[in-house]
Amino acid sequence: MGKTREIQKRIKAVGNIKRITRTMQMIATAKFSQALQRATAGKPYSKALFELVGELAATAGDELNHPLLQHSGEGKALTLVLTSDRGLCGPFNGSVLRASMHHFRNTEGAREGYVEVVGKKGVGFYKFNGIEVTRHHTQFGDKPAYDEVDRLAQDFIDRFIAGEISRVNVVYTRFISAGKQVPEVMQLLPFETPEAPEDESKDAINQIYEFSPDGPGLLDEILPAAIKAVLFQTFNDAIVSEHVARMVAMKSATDNAGKMGKQLSRTYNRARQAQITTELTEIISGAAALE
Image (cartoon, rainbow, N blue to C red; front, side, top):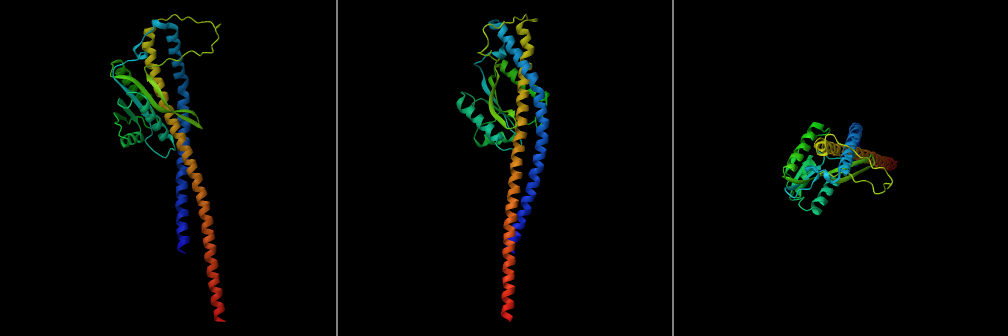
C-alpha cells in the first residue's frame, strides 16, 4: 500500500510540473512571436544604413576620415555581454558566456578592460569566475526600448571619441532562424564598413556620387545612427534567441514529463495488480485453511 501511495504522489507531482512547463512554453511562444516581429521589422533599416555607410566610405576613398572609423590606441577595451535575467532557457546563456570567455582569452586587453553586462545570469557567472563587472545594465528587460539603446550607444560613442575606450565589442546570440541561433562577438567600435564582394564583375560600372554636404558631414549624421541601429538589432536578436531557446526547453520538459507520467502509471498499475494478486492469494489461502 505504501509503494502505491508513493507512486501516486509522484504521478501527481509530475502532472503539476507538466502543466507548469506547458504554460511556460505557451508564454514563451507568444513572446517569441512578438519579439520576432520587432526584430524582423528593424533589420531592413539597419541593413540599409550599414550599406549606405559602406558605399559612402568606398566612394570617398582615402579622403574620407572619421573618428568612429579609426582605431585608437588609447583607453581600455570594452565588452558588452547580452544575457538573460531568467533561466530555464536551455543553452542560451551558456553559449554566449562561453563565447565571451573565449573572447577574453584570445583578445589582448579584453579581460582587463571594461566588462558591461545585460542580464542577471551573466553577472552571477562572472562573479563566480572572478571577472569584475564594470556595469550591470538593468533597464532593458524583455522589450528593450530604442531610447534606452540609443542612450547606451551614445555613451559608447562619446567615450570612444574622448579616448576613454579603444574599442567596443558586443557578445550576443545572433538569431538566424527558429532552429539556429549562433553566439557571436561583434565589433561595434570602431565601426567596420562592409567590404565589396571579391567576385564582382570587372566590367561593372562604378557609380560616382556627389555628396552634399561633404562626406565627413554626412558621416557625422549617418555613422552614429548606423551604430545605434546595429546595437538595437543585437538586442532584438538576443531577445528573440532567448525566447525561442526557452520555448524549445519548455517543450522538451513537457514531453519528458508526459513520458515520465506514462512510465509511472505503468509502474503503478503493475504494483496495484501485484497487490491485488497478493490479497486474493491470502483470501483463498485463509478460506482453504478453514475447510
